[in-house]
Image (cartoon, rainbow, N blue to C red):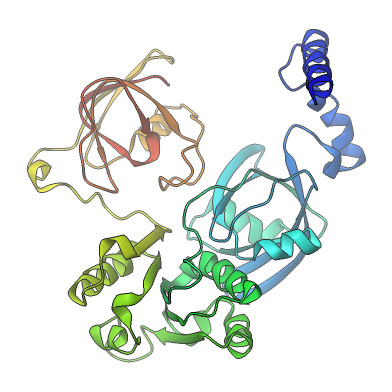
Length: 371
């Protein structure tokens, strides 16, 4: 092992001297990409093997990553990178398949919904076909499986079903025997993503009960209510997993607390960012302020709940970012002075040096950052 490690370090040092780069294995990528995109070394390539139209605006992409990709845990996210209009763009999506599919067949799935004005999601729907190759990052995230011997409740909305599909497929394969309930909220039954897959899961996975609830098929909207929770046997003993629009998750959290479910038994992940939820102590203080991008020698100012990422992009800068929702941490950078508000929690940062995420940080007075 020592000899192998030493040899690897020596080759890395030699490659760095010869090619003046930290990833010498990727030096030949331009040539390899023309021969076979799956051979490149600078990133993990993944080839589209199949596409499945789930609903009118949602499609599942079946991908085959290069064998060196390290895999994932059920419920995790992954960053993908595609080139649109000559620009490399990175976005974050949940994996909708089980780790067993990757282990046994070398395949993964991403189930992606079109977004109004979405640069990447819409491009993928319109252009990404079988044989195309995209760049895949390592999986991350802690929206992980329930404890095997405790009953579970999943509450999902819209495309928030994607990591839940990964959970349920994995639980069925591994033989989780405790009761599992899914309350899945969609605008109409036609908008239910993976409807047939959920039916098949329910039929072969005995502990699972699936309820697909349409919110806008009648004159009055039909949202999550206490009756829905009362229909779940032994609710207080359940581990609860929430995934979907923030409005649904806020309502679910409120109702669960009313029914005696503890915070420690509730896990959540999200798919969109609502307007900043300010701490009451800060609600009367205006947001925005002067922003200094120290590395770029640029100063600008903002008003209202505009994130530092949006301010930077409006100023002509292109800081690294991914999900734009506070999940992937690709936009993390160093704040050197000033205070920012976390738009997810509504809480203020400290006034000094610390790491922040550009996409969810709003200036609260003058701020300086290393960008």
